[in-house]
Image (cartoon, rainbow, N blue to C red; front, side):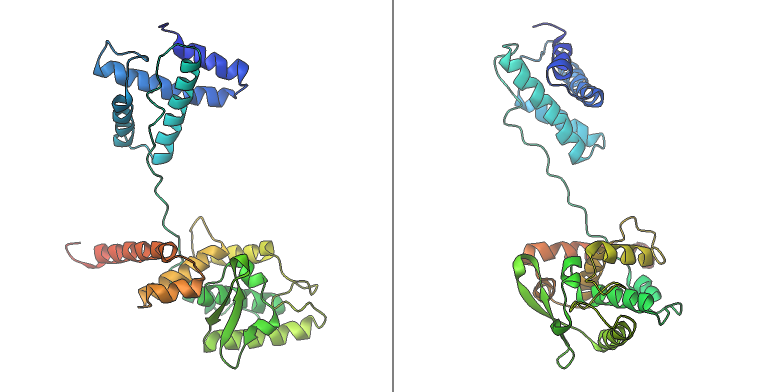
Length: 296
C-alpha cells in the first residue's frame, strides 16, 4: 500500500470533488491524527490493517483530549470518506469505519432570563405612555407570562383574548389550539395597550399586535423589540422571544408547577420535550447551592 495514500485522497478531494482548500485541510488534519494514533499503538499497523476497535479507541482519545462530540463526528466523517475512496480504488480490502457511529451531540440547555432581571426590565420607570413603549412592554409581558412562541403571539387576534375568563386562545404548530390563562397584571397591560393602540392607530387589522401603520406585526418586528429590551438587563448572547418562552417554563417549574401542566401550557406534544427544563432548573439549584452553602 503506498505511503502517499492520504495525499492521493486529498488530491481526489481537490481536483475531482472540487472541495475547498479549507475542507481539504480539515480532512488532512483528521487523517494525519488518526494515522499518528494507530502507528503509536503498533508500528506495524497500516490503513489496510486497522479495525473498528482501533477507530473507536481513537475517538475516545479525541474526547479525552477535550474535543466536543461535533468535532469528533467531523473527524469520523473524514475517515469514512477516506475509506470509501480507498475501497473503491482497491487500496484496502475492507472498510473498518463503515459501521462506526459517532458520539451523540449533547443538546445545549435552554437559556433563560433570571427572574430578578425580568422584574428589573418590566418594572423599570423608563416605560413611556406612547404606543411604542406600551406595545413593547405588553409583548414582553405576554411572552414571559404565557410562554408563547413568536408566531403564536403575532397570530393572536383581538377575539382570542377573553378578559372575562382571563384566557387566551392560542393557535400553535399545525394549527393546534390551546387555552392559556393569564393573570391580573397581564390583563391590565393588555387593556392599556388596546386602549392606546385604538387611540393612536384607529384604523388597523384585526390582529392584536399591529405596527404603526395598522398592519399585523411580523415575527422580525417582535424579535427586534425583544432583543433591544433584553439587552438592557442581560449580557446573554441569545436574546430572542424563544428565550422568554424558556424563561416562562423555568420560572413555572422553579415555583412548583407540575411538568404535565407546563407541557400543556407550552403546547408540547411530548412530555420529553418539556423535561429538558427540569435539567435547567436543576442546574440553577446547583448554582444556588454552590453560592450559598459554606462548604459548597
